[in-house]
Length: 210
Image 1 (cartoon, rainbow, N blue to C red):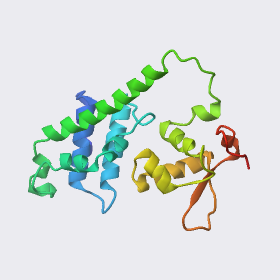
Image 2 (image 1 turned 180 degrees about the vertical axis):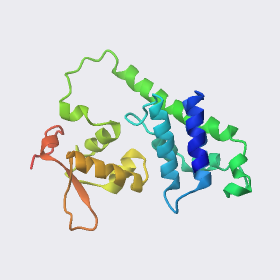
Image 3 (image 1 turned 90 degrees about the vertical axis):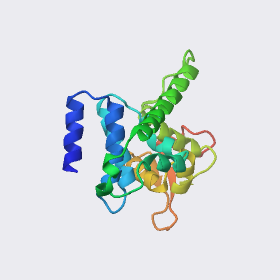
């Protein structure tokens, strides 16, 4: 891990393209496999951080996590660049051309989706959004939209709507609860459901405020 951190710093100092650094860091982190669990999620978070620091702000619109979740078998196949899973059996020195091509194509897919959104919204006059809505990113807005047809939603329903793993969505929910727009409906129940806070209910048609 110390070598990986040092390599990332050196690559950034040498102005290696950020997508290349992020893709290699993602692969090598998974290869090193420093944790018992959560290595994949941490590798994707590391790649996103590297991109973000170089000006590639993907997370507010679409995340790499969502792109991979659309076809997990293809994602896992792209990571299989060497017959050995062990770092010390040659995997760390494998040819990463195919993996990097997959990684960069995932980034391209994200930006193409954002470009389509911008084109669709260009020239459409609309009233300024309330400040409370402006602070919500795309994933939060998708979840907000779920409340147009129901009073409460579960983490599993949010995961399906976002195309993300349940564990990833649970992490997002923690932040949304802290932000105050999402409220835990019944803490005592094992199957937890979530409500919108009273402040946000009036943004959704057909939902009665508490």
